[in-house]
Image (cartoon, rainbow, N blue to C red; front, side, top):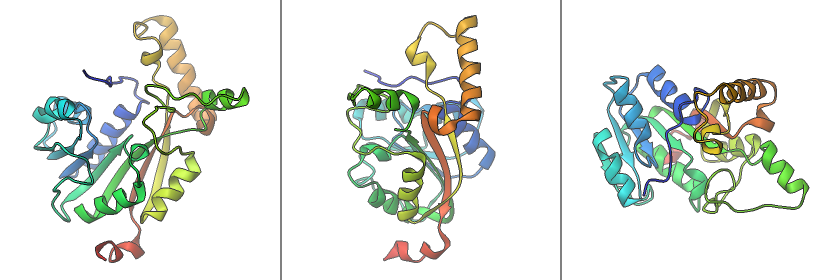
Length: 233
């Protein structure tokens, strides 16, 4: 059974990440936690000639993603037999909140990345307005998906996420918020005037107060200059 849906909103993480990858125009790319292969699908749809590999531990999802990638590693990122110093772009979309030690995982990814690699990392924003309101009434429910997904082991704000990435040897050069996936809240709403109005209002809210209305943060980072040698130790 497939768990995730491809989101079409241009401010969604799917769409923002694929635009970043296309704009960079660098390969090979490593898609960590590829799920059903959305990044590979979107790049293929754009007639991309970029080489992209995937890591996905869920066996059914990995098989579904396989046609869209040059090579698919059906294992956890910790166990994947990835080649050293190979990838010029590393994408970690909603992955690090699920692993026991995200700093160690980033350390592994730095070893398989080139010195000039770009890291694109998205993480849920626990400071979203909806979570703030839940805490205000004394609730912190665990859910099947979203910011409070029951499989999340870590929760981040904009600042604590950047601190974690920096402690792992990365230097953040850009951060941007994504909107809440309105198509998950109203699956049949796309194309309707009210849905379009809600989307525009959310885009405005993200411009005004991204720390409050951001559903996720997308970070663009590279290896901190002082850590290029220490990653081999």
